[in-house]
Amino acid sequence: MAPRHAANFGWSISMVLRRWQEFAEEAFRDLPHGSRGFLLLSVVVHEDVPTQGALATRLAIDRTVLTYVIDDLEKAGLIERRPDPRDRRARRIVATETGRKVQAEGEKRMADAEASVLGGLPEDQREAFRDYADRAAEAIFKAAPGTNPCMAVESL
Image (cartoon, rainbow, N blue to C red):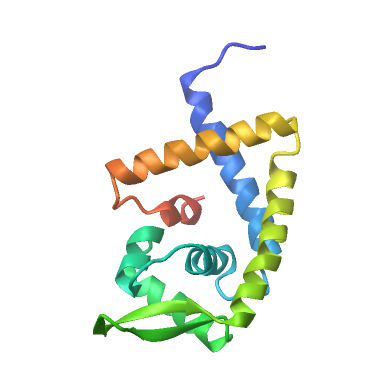
């Protein structure tokens, strides 16, 4: 194996991210806002995010951008805004039954996209890569919660 150089890390991460973006956007071309819409839908289905503001923080998405994503997913019948029973000024974002079905189907699409991107690795290394990437991302998010992951994709 060739020696690793510090400059290769950025190139490596960029290649993985770029390829993932291509596969993910193709997989979710029929969903409002593509993979970003799927990410929002997944968080709404799997996590208890109490308000729209908390959802923006959790996803590290600008609140203005988040509003457009929510609007379009709501128009598609995938989510709905409900008043928070503890604070009527706040809105909770809740997946509809259709949204839950779309999200479940999307999990399969995402698994296929990930398999395509990481197809050059044996399965145990794919799992390790995902695990280490998750750990690194969570550590970054905790240390710098204002980090906007969308900027990486937009600047590619």
